[in-house]
Image 1 (tube, rainbow, N blue to C red):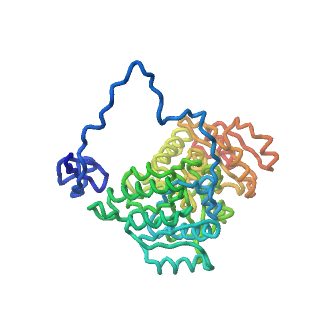
Image 2 (tube, one colour; image 1 turned 135 degrees about the vertical axis):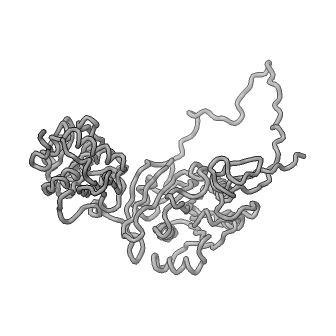
Image 3 (cartoon, rainbow, N blue to C red; image 1 turned 90 degrees about the vertical axis):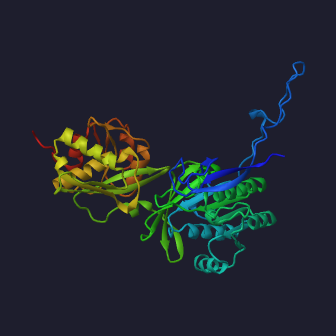
Length: 464
């Protein structure tokens, strides 16, 4: 019988080592190595030499074309925004990881969905962080009336697995995976080993009895999901719940989804009775009054188009090096756009501080916002106000040219629905007939200078 080997696991990054070090050789964390026993490898199973006279036949594999089609029946969560991000609902036997900052509303969202789904199917809510009375008080505030929702306040993994096997619910919610504890492991709850083994045990049970499993995950101070990276590879979907905890609106994003599109976006508003779906999300990101340095763009998040205001402030710097700050847009992207404006329009922006923010706290990562950023910066520099009802869409090249963007038709339809009447877009979009049908004036431009003259109505360049 092989003897057990001693392996040291890092509780931060999950690295393994045969020797103990005060500092992890992989991630550099101090005092993070924990000793764990592991059965020694006996060299593997011996293979019999193949018989040349007998042809070999597959034992367990199956031809892909011979597999029967089994349609997937998704389980609706009771929230249209939640279903949108999941790709249409929960898939039986799938694992979904929901992460977010403390107090952002993860437990509120899942408890509301659990109460709604319990009217149609069996649901088990496992609370590993709060007592049963605490969960009931929040449930009474959110849902109220009678419900068949089952509640288990437990942190022991074995007891949770026994309850799941006994009830065999269609949906189970674990709040949270970092609070579960496997007594067979010596490490503390929330460590790398505990999170990895607890998630793996729950995955095996969920796949075996086709239970849709929703896991709540903590995040680190850097905003990353806590625990080993293998946890994100283990689950079928990773959702992030974002937003300012002191503001009312919340954003649910799909970072990974094996059963739907990624980068979908769901919007909610936190109210006294819980989270409410936002029917017209563009209203959250539009300013009621127009001012200098404000430009409007149309951003696409998955299959959804959002009309968003960009706010820029350009002021003479009092430092040796000007300050450049961006909220909601990458700072490197802002530096690139400022360099293009200074090179091709002659604006001395290198002597000015520049601050840029996306209204409503939305993160805009796509390059289609470049023209809107340039318009907001130039409008603030010249102290101009863009004409009302103007939207700008286009990618800005390093040569000052405008490049076409994707899903332009959906963007213009959303802008027209909200009452916009002018759209500045790259030339060659081929959407003239669509714009006339939407009562939208399409202003096409080849470069950034022409586009800003069309948008602002005057020459904004510095003549040399």
